[in-house]
Length: 150
Image (cartoon, rainbow, N blue to C red; front, top):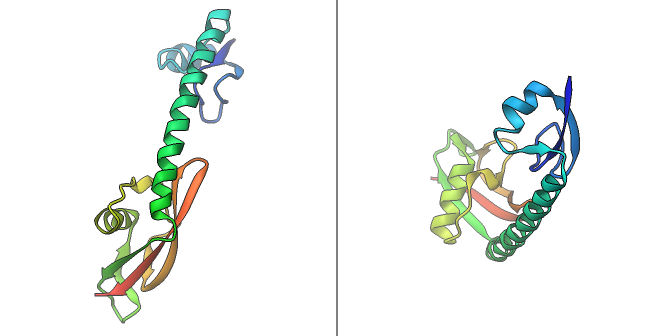
């Protein structure tokens, strides 16, 4: 037995806010409805969705403006990190996103979250690296990270 619901928020692997989806009754009753992620399809739910959409647009616009301000400070900026090395090039350990965040805060006085630093793998050798910082879903800037021997 399935239930037809209107999604009020984006739900991974199910749909975006505003989509009408059919889900199992238990999933709707035990997860989507109690967490206020969806509502039964009705005129009232559509009005509520429209109100939520306007609020989210306003919040997103404000967050994008803040992200652009940070991006202007971070764009083409560089930070230097010192680390111990094994043989002059390979690091004894690695440089993680948290280390880059700390260097940005102390050096440039810009606060970013470590989840915004895009590193596929930790930095494990000395050199110069271009690291992407995703400040907003629509805005990414690049910071040059210099890793030098301590």
